[in-house]
Image 1 (cartoon, rainbow, N blue to C red):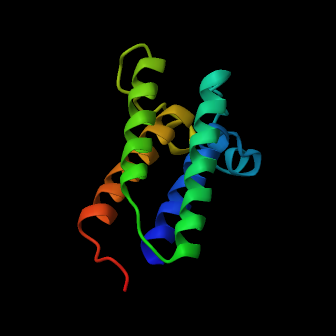
Image 2: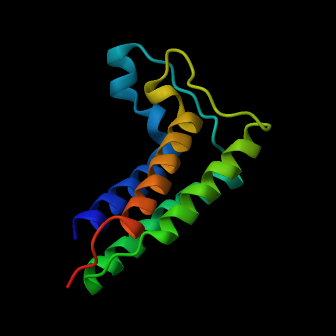
Length: 128
């Protein structure tokens, strides 16, 4: 259950990443600027991938099994798409923004999601 819970949390973070630097109370308190560099079809794509990953993790928790390979694929898919969305550059953190901006945060979370999927698939024991 633990690996699926971690994958579900990471999927929720990925689904919420287009709005992560637009949290007004935090931005006002730390005097960060609000940026919105994930818009349009890419925003829908990230939210869909994150929500689908969350639902799949809940499904795996219900069945009491582990399955990390889809998360490896989802993380890699978002990484590659974010790379091309950012005009074939690795997204870098923006100055004076919460978590480096939405695109950087989504890039980092998708990388962590892919690595966690790899670890869950090949290094965590199968439940009995």
